[in-house]
Length: 493
Image (tube, rainbow, N blue to C red; front, top):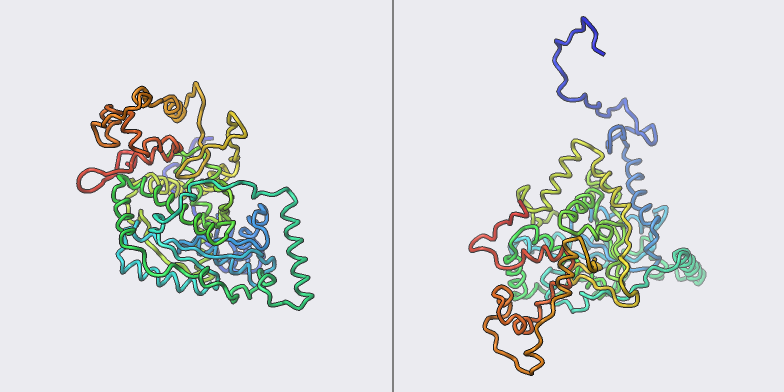
């Protein structure tokens, strides 16, 4: 309360006093003895050893808590060369060593997708990047696969279909699998087969196993020039940077899924950090993918059926990843992304990233709040009219279509109900006549002439009906842009 005679003439404090940096007089909050070298949050200062224990425990606890990776399974590590995915590969490498307290028991492999064409790299820069990538991949000792993005044109149609479910076993399946694996190890040890590959899955000898060369090398030779030109033309026809990023993510996912199925990997690990998932959650909300947030940001993603995508780095922030990679010399390779040097308002992804990071700088609990919100999302598909009928899925993202029935109040429900009620004209077809179309395929929809005949000539006229709302919105930006520079649409401003 104000008092008479108080002096208010002093200058007001413009900024709150900052906490003093940890020095030699401060001690680690964990062991109370070591000199702190890392401050994760305000008041949480760790020494080098305690920070490593804290970091590794987060990774192991995320895998152990969910119990989705069974012993002996082949797991594909999706590595982009960035800090988070590089730290994930390093965690797996250390978890398979003999000195590890709780050794990992799965069979890893690494995949790198070369996206140089989509990012506008020259052939010389791509060759230099691939050389650096091969050097890091060979140092791990894991089987590795180096695939260019142009291979998406060679993918079979089966990559757009969801395989049969049934990967998630009963509640005690994980414990049964672990017991069976341990019994197999003890049996092989009793027989004197200590150097058996099956016994060495969780030991350091994993890095020296004689892998199949066809299963651990990149494709022979560079991609075909026709495929490179086709991919360049495809990304050049996209109008906005937002649509380009969504298209690149879709093509990358399809390619990773195909490699995993071809080489027998049942799980795929990605290096999405806590900060990146918080940005992705808000971005997907802005892109109309709110119905699929549990699949896009959760620990596991079972939308593909036979291949499950897991995110073991989702408890680590980018700050923790950067400190760990710096303190323990985790190798990484910088590769320019499709939005490198792009302005803040160039795309929804860049705008949301700048918004979250700026808000995090002012309010340090922003990322954790958004991340904890994503943990509460439940993967509960909507009840369809018939449980026995196959659930319709989006052709691009493979998510279950959230199709509303009659009297829908949502924009997507209104579109789907309108498309379901559309019937092509049939009098001419019933009469057995096929009139000559007066316009080229695809132009009839704009001119509203000979609509039925043109849609029958164009097989892709009804493809849009098999897309979710988010993919349908992004598909509007696919196509030839204005003359000259494609530019950015109003949605990205």
